[in-house]
Length: 583
Image 1 (cartoon, rainbow, N blue to C red):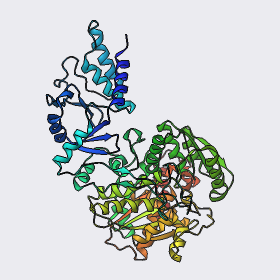
Image 2 (tube, helix red, strand yellow; image 1 turned 180 degrees about the vertical axis):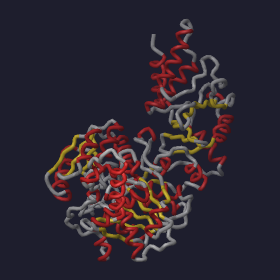
Image 3 (cartoon, rainbow, N blue to C red; image 1 turned 90 degrees about the vertical axis):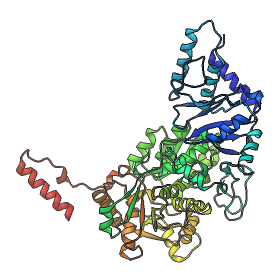
Image 4 (spheres, rainbow, N blue to C red; image 1 turned 60 degrees about the horizontal axis):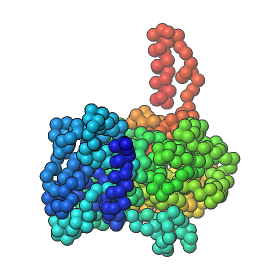
């Protein structure tokens, strides 16, 4: 006799083959419905209840099953209108099985149903139990099915909305931002004519202020709260480690020290792998999974290597990361801990490492996780979305971002422009690129009035995470974002960067790697020049944890030297250390 699970799987396959529509899940007070035509529809509970009362009688034995956002409860709707209620421990339309509602673990649910069947060995599995198991399998395995014609639903929604369909964002074809070329597939990332990185666009023009309010009230505290704005077609493809919604902290002590009382710090040191790269790679590796790639690759000065490795592991993909000799061992170890194949290469990052990486991508067909991948670049739009949300729609005067290749600037600006296009905000902040003086091609190009970047030879710098001299992929787009926002760019010396790192630790309680502290160094310099004014609201993005590069912190031998176990020795040691800090 077939097990109930086998029967359920057969039912999933049958329904998936014979019906033209799919149900996703419920989030807060909205329900998302995907259909084969590519439309994504948002419904309210009242929409579903109204439609349940109007649907054709012949489908009355079919339940519409919705998984709540937190994954712990099922709601059933009998399309005949007989029952409309979330299942609880003591209620619900299932009469022949125990009230099974917990979906925290599929096997818990399976076990409870099996237990019921063991108690009733002579009875066939009740239809309700089969439906319930079917939905669990459909949800967990990504198969989706219910039993009515979506055309009826769309028609009813049009009537109830005055003829306007409510569909979610749809992914448009990749397009060259310079010459408008569109490739034949979604796996070609570079324009064959002008060599520009192609651009992703999602159709969002239909989103309303009600949609904005629903998104802001979501209990999803990751970047995927803003799923509508990302280039992923199927939520089952999402790869998340809890990235996003990082603290936006008003730093009073540091702000007063810098002469910027309204200083905020966007603390991305708390992201899953300790750097801003998690924003990009959550989206990038989700797309890799959706496109069917099996190996992800990246060349990196460290942070991207660890992040790609982590998200590839979560997605079930292999990963290969290439780093230049001299990369901080802590970053290499982190990537290796996630199971990556780590390759350390003798040579300059922008030359020998880049050339080998390009050849390897062509030879092996790996999924590219650099900024030359337009899907991956979309993740940093989340900076804009989160700042608007966390400042309660107040727009900062400045956002200062540590900059290597320019992806963060370009993506942030795109995010703000999307909100502007929807009327969700009425202005955007001025952007600032903070670069190490040892590798500052964006600063140089902006000062010269160039439309594109002139590569420079990146010199050694304490800010190794942004040690990039040739931001070939998105440098010109970062320049455009700076100009369009009426922003600027600042080059910082190693001494200024290390001072900012120290200030962040002592006055704000954040241990940042040197590259991440360049935003604070830039804020100080721009305030001293009176470019930033005392009354301005300023956000500094703190993009990586100090443990990424602990060797940057210099500790003198006497600080670690043992002392005698006496109060006199302790008093003298504390005095010396306090004098050192003041100096």
